[in-house]
Length: 279
Ligand SMILES: Cc1ncc(COP(=O)(O)O)c(C=O)c1O
Image 1 (cartoon, helix red, strand yellow):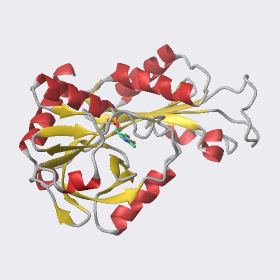
Image 2 (cartoon, helix red, strand yellow; image 1 turned 180 degrees about the vertical axis):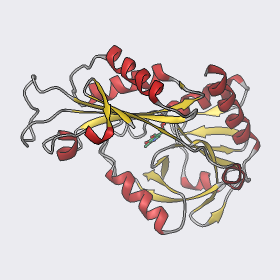
Image 3 (spheres, rainbow, N blue to C red; image 1 turned 30 degrees about the vertical axis):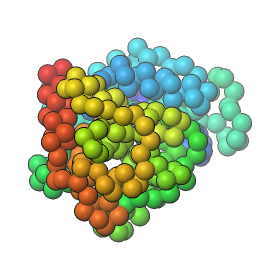
């Protein structure tokens, strides 16, 4: 497999990153994951806009966005599948360990690769998945898509140890998001998801789902909702680049909502129609 590293397309076996890379030492970097449908990047511009916001959020110097998109196109050409994901990571570069930023001549490390991706099976979608709620102990800049994902990793592992699919972060009784997806509920016929604040990642799939819901005339409330609201929801689903739209049917051991409810399925169908149509 070929990977893109610092401007070059090279064989993954020869791709090495220095042990003084600040991504390795400090999780000092940001990333993006982009879905490839029918060999086309889905919502490329929105991902690039979020990447630039994330870079600004950690004062990472500008990178050549044109070169980045050329590199991504080259990776796509090398990719022999139809559906996959592009992973893109930018760190503050390689410099002997010191908390302070390195001097400006130290250039960011830029890594990208494309791998095939298996969408959820129809069975998983129709059955739905189970989640647990966990206290949101992340920092106050969750809106930055940083590679510092330890709280997410620990929460996901806790979920897996309990035999469930994912964990949902709860802050002051309010539901924020899952470990790598946003979360929506339909309650009393109204579609709800946490508003964009510094405490959630503004998901691209979340945004697309909301646009589709609006087009379809579904009532929407972008207001925080509580764990109790979730327990008494008619439908619950996750949204994310790899997750797409995935129904949740169990929360903290209680069966909640319908198996793949009408709104959930409508949004999933419309998202896929849009993704393959754009492609
Ligand atoms: C914490 C978190 N929330 C939400 C999302 C969903 O964002 P997107 O739809 O842009 O993939 C992700 C995606 O990785 C995430 O890591």
